[in-house]
Image 1: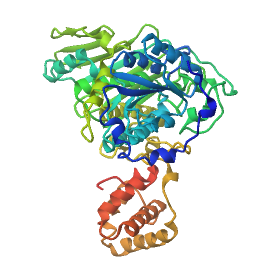
Image 2 (image 1 turned 180 degrees about the vertical axis):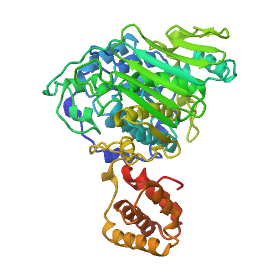
Image 3 (image 1 turned 90 degrees about the horizontal axis):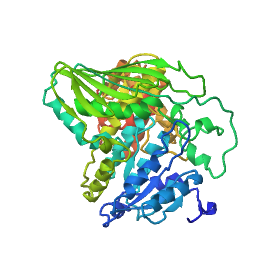
Image 4 (image 1 turned 30 degrees about the vertical axis):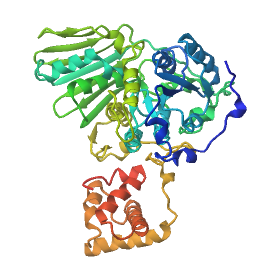
Length: 533
């Protein structure tokens, strides 16, 4: 195996990646040759309580396809490279090139697609950068670290006409498709409630002190957009799942699979009300996320409940749909109906497992069937993946705030709840930022703001004293969200409108300007200005 040369590693600027045009890289992935050239981003670790690294698992199915060439292995920990190369050798494939920094790979025009199996806090940036560089993306679940990122991933896939598939492999299951058909044809009758759960015996991770970074690890790259802090083994390989800065807890780790299946089978879109309860009731260790949790999601026609007890032995995973003509039960053997109609299917357990390759094959086929702006949507398209991941984020936010949330699907914000809305995004550590991501107030330019603020405050005065034409389109939004007309929020809002008018000319009407400014505001402000715009 070719040794990794640390001196080849260059800290390239995120600006150079963000500025790549879709046109300049269109030939890289629009019409791939007979073979689709892949890069594996993230190999994964084997620590107690893990499943062996999702990146390692994905090398097997992708390397089994004769029309796929795995050209790169990428990981911030060079100690994983030998294992990845051995997996390729076992599949009788040539050695892959080795890189620590995914940005180096994105600059290679010969790469058609990337497989992102990083920690959650890297999913969105890796996906968006890859789309901007003209690459298709297979990204592991959950789609994102926070809700705002998920929407930006969808926007990137559409803007750059890329295939983006989420690693929720049940979407490619013929067995679950039969269950969905059973439900949608009305054979179970009304289904007012569904429930999913997982149990297990995850180990206590104990308490660890901060320590030196292990040899061969680029810790700065591992942190990426997350806040800078000292290295700690309990916040590193796999155990990052249980830390809010990097992971999404058990709800995002395993709950995403179950909630995605229920959304698909019941044809659900967005919950309107979310309530959560739980806590760290069992483990006394460094984990931040709850070891015991129940979340209830209210939809227009039914409710869905998620439960996890990561310390409970023997309970396993499962789901149940409670219909008027029987209860549809899902377990590791397939599915069947109890106390009602007779129906069962145990046909493709392997298809849904790690060893199955149906989902990965669907991703490759979609790449080969896409050209230019005509994109073949995969079974687990990022739009659906985002909607399912969104449920996980909302459940976690309801838990962290300790109250019920009411969610507006159109604006993807929590109604009248600034604290909850602040948890919809995050701040990004430079240079690991992207212009398509909201939530980082440092991305907004206030170079012209001194003069704008004067003008904006004058507009506020005029709007209040004379009820002028300018203030009407947004006045009710201020009132609805409790914004005072002379407040900081109101002044910044109008300042951005003035900035847009100065740069774009007077031809845009104020409502269009308001919509544009809302997209430019810091998250804590723009989430309170969404109504009726």
